[in-house]
Length: 297
Image 1: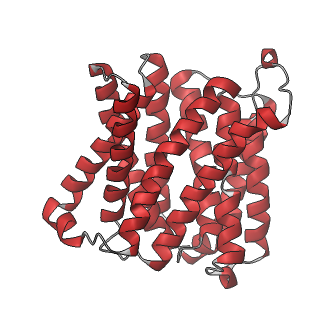
Image 2: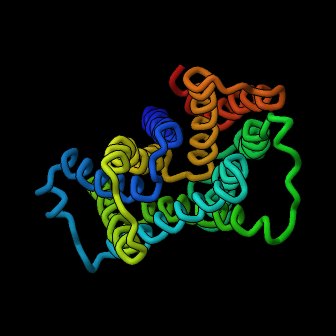
Image 3: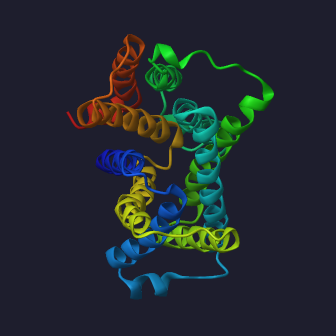
């Protein structure tokens, strides 16, 4: 449970960093690419460079998988940025959070990891998690107006939904099959290293410039970003790689804490549906983790 809570806090720190980006007018893409390099440096300092080097196996399945995930990380960010620009923050947020459906389905019906440990309350909590996320993420600004629905307008959010699901499902699969306790701090380092490599190539081709402000923002983002993936792998291991429990709990926890942080630090206001969604989200946490809670009482 502690790793799940720490993962939530690391992700909320990322959310706060992104909010600061808009306030200080940071160029997001250069900051993100810088963040990947900082993730690598943070991981090397935390784990020890000699330990990391000794664990690298270029021919291993997990090493190749890290390269694949690096491409997915950069692509997903680009899609999220475009979705935010063209469809709005709320649409991008809902699409990314609802992507938990993909790792949940894979965990339950494809990987069939620890499904025997789930009871009726767990399944009920999984269903309620989707409802809670929609309610908390619903824009409460009446001036926002209604969004027309068409295949064209759904294209980018659908891509964010799919790519976000691919990342979480891939981490779940890799952690279950290849990543040992010794590799948990190393795997994110290589993944972020590959992401930085692909990203810097893109920046060179597009001649994207880096300012001091963008680099500083990337440093502030990179430290919690490394630990968000490292701790997520630890949380998956703690729950026997049961993504059906981890990902709904993780997303709900992030939404609750980040929403409260937005209200406290950014003076955001919640509408009635948002408030009900937060309460429902808290109920979901108890439904998903009641076995763990009872075990520790």
